[in-house]
Image 1 (cartoon, rainbow, N blue to C red):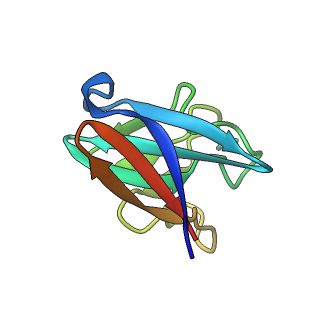
Image 2 (cartoon, rainbow, N blue to C red):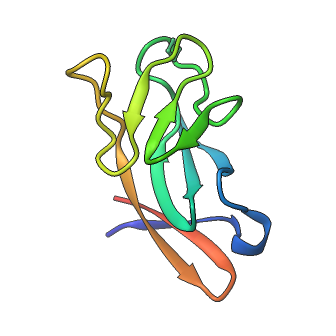
Length: 103
Ligand code: FES
């Protein structure tokens, strides 16, 4: 059974931005990629920097602000350093409220 985490309001999440939360030992985020909401683990696989703080999402790619590792937001796969992958999470919208589903 999954856990439903309230992340914030869609009306406060414009395209190109993200909402991040710490859930116990993990950081998760919802990204708005041009209107598409994407739930991802939000710690870079390189040195655990936040992919929300300073990270940019463009054309389906999330770029870490620290050293430029790139992630495909559709799959979570790191595209410039193969073998690393961010966890993906399902998102639910209930009216204006965004929920992330933790398995
Ligand atoms: S911490 Fe993200 S690329 Fe180094």
